[in-house]
Length: 104
Image (cartoon, rainbow, N blue to C red; front, side):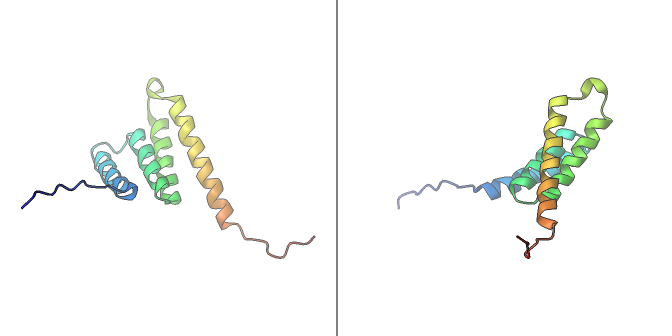
């Protein structure tokens, strides 16, 4: 009987779920690492979980601001702040009441 070899195909959602699990384990080891929180926020954003993404990015910013000045990385902080602002803007737009009776 011939041997058939299968190649595993990982979808992005499966890969993202695996990455999220790995990041959660990393947070168990080091819950104050701003980079881990930032990456977890990225995974959540990619999965369409905007509110959870924003929460992780906010945790990232909190940890960045707790770090020593010499350890702060301004470019990373600015990037996370931009992500938080973008998500908050989108969430606000979705939750704003839609005016269906516009007067012309």
